[in-house]
Image (cartoon, rainbow, N blue to C red; front, side, top):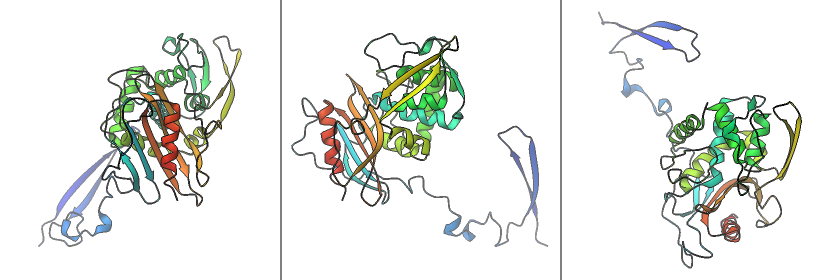
Length: 321
């Protein structure tokens, strides 16, 4: 008689609804057993982590280009999403400061942990008084929905709104940064470390051009994200601590959408996220489409100035046929 082993599987559900136990007969010699590895075919194998991702290969030529001084940039990449092909690849793994491109991950954490109608309340962490920091001008007790916050975050790049999201979703700036770093690791962005949700300068806050692609590519799974990053401007009414209406209007930091720069004629810019600080330089991660509707992600990091940023981005977009 063939010996039979009973395996008890205990499944504990994350929603705390209790435990269920199942008894499954198992014959160690049966060819039908799920535990006989030699009987498994390829269809039963887990897909590769990078199955639908672009992988950098040999670095692209950088002749007549410099990483330092005027007209310079440090990293640039172009990804063909349909064919999972890296079309241009320069310094993909160089650690750089992301500045406000950080807010791509801030949006991901918010969208994956909150509903759009959740009301967020500002505290003292959301108050910025510096004149040179992009902000809405929040004060303690101000409230807005997550939907409003995501618009101000991604279109206008408001740093006080980034903190608003962090303290309401993560409980604190530090707690939210932990959530960001955990998600980055799960996406394979292993050369990334976040210490805040805004991208304000910190030497321990860094990423790479390839990691930015991984995070932005994940964000594109959300229709709400694509909708918002493609908007030229935004106006909404939130409320102060007294319940009074406060109107704030803003324009996109993406200069393609504003009409300051023009993409090649066969390319349509869908939207993206900028980032700029003195230490980070000027940066842009962006989604574009060709005449057939195929999608591409471009990344340019640490450009010396805005003109260099958009000139290099255009040189990448010109590679799209």
